[in-house]
Length: 236
Image (cartoon, rainbow, N blue to C red):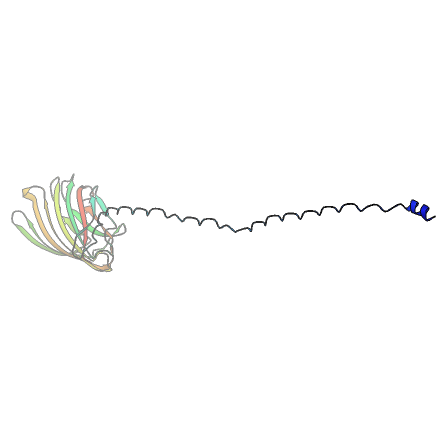
């Protein structure tokens, strides 16, 4: 039985060979450490300095303002018809004024003179408030004086011939102020040597009134005037 049992069991076989031990794997390479990378600093670029522009030319010198006692031309006015208004010439800029006239009265047979009246706007004085004192000489030997209140000042003397020519130099004080206005003038009028007239006159407008202009009228309204009037301001 033991034999049978042994036969049935079989003999233990020989031990097989020991298997080869597996190789230890090669350690992989150590990974690289990441190194932060700072890029190059940006360049700062400074452009070239701009050129300074050339200095501009000096402009022309402006007119010199009015000086005390200096004549300043206000305007030149043409005479025509039998009435010429010269407005807006007296202002607060000046106290005193110079009026020059080179005149002709034409188309007449007598009383060919010219008269002067102050204006407020375009309205002339209408009352006899001009107190006039004058000396005159009529060629060749007539000498006289006049003292009178009138509604005007003579600008050129009345003549008796066809055309009368006149030249006037008049100074006026304080026409724009509301006080009594004064004036002095010299004039010469002539038609020919036989009708030569020279006069000096002083006048006061005997009311406290402000004026901004004046008018020139012919003595006889049917006559016509021509010529120029020049107005200057001075003194403040």
